[in-house]
Amino acid sequence: MNHIELLIRLLPWLVSHPGVSAEVVAKEFGITSREVLKLLDLLQYTGPGQYGGELVDVHFGAGESIHVIDAQRFDRPIRMSGAEASTLLAGLTYLEQMPALADSVEVTQLIEKISKALDPAPTVDVVTNVREHECVELIKAAIESNLQVAIDYASGSATNASHRTIEPKVLLTRDDLTYVRAWCHEAEALRTFRIDRIAHAEILSVLQSVEVESTELARSTDSWIAVTVELDREHLGEFDNDTVKSVTEIENGRLRVESKVANLDWFVSVVLAAGGAIKVVEPEEARELVLHRARTWLSR
Image (cartoon, rainbow, N blue to C red; front, side, top):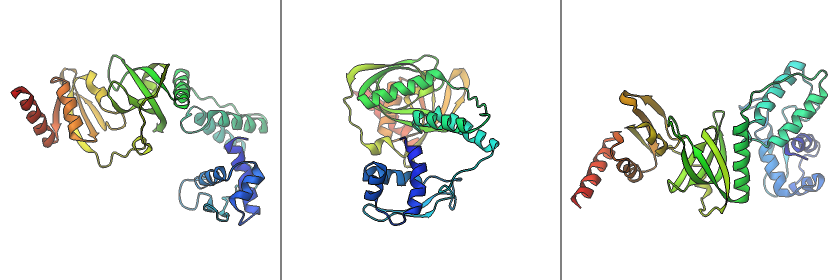
């Protein structure tokens, strides 16, 4: 039984058995107590809306009794019009193409069940990118098997794809785009790659060798340093997609880029390695550090 179907069965049962323990629920549904707690976590983000009073309210804790305070009417058979069913199917069909958000197999099964219940079944057509979907499945397989992946990647406005060897760690979805957070052997650092910019991907028969803390994968850039640079187009790939705030065309085919960096030492090393192709506009501290380090090298 998939998670969606299990949640649909679980909520009405919890409503009719107030104060039950996770152990009892686990025995009833043939799962573990840990899985019960994970499902209860999901229930808290379920509802007809996304704001207070629109989500399922359930109180629970490890080893404590479970009480459903507000089931948002999901504890009874759901009745919907043809228009509502069509809207739901359209949303599910779109979600089916975002495997980083949900198990596409489970979503497909739910689509089939809803479609069979409707007569006539509404036609829902969502245009998908088959190559991108196949790439996501390949990345997922590499993560599960702990193998490295070779990719040809076109970063930002770059005209030519670069060849990289990565160790994919996690798939992310943001603003309708799917990304893979991975250790990049060429950059010797964590990088975020947009799936739709991966021209080719191939799983290698080489085990991943770099361990990454989960806190690094779910990083926050709030405390990072804002920088502005002017650079040649091919150097845009030095900055992660999820840290670049804006890219503007300027004269002679160069770009003005506003981004964020974790520390100035790394940033300055990238600027110097570009051999003049990257010019620092802001902050002044970074400009001074570039000059200081360049003069130090020259003096040697």
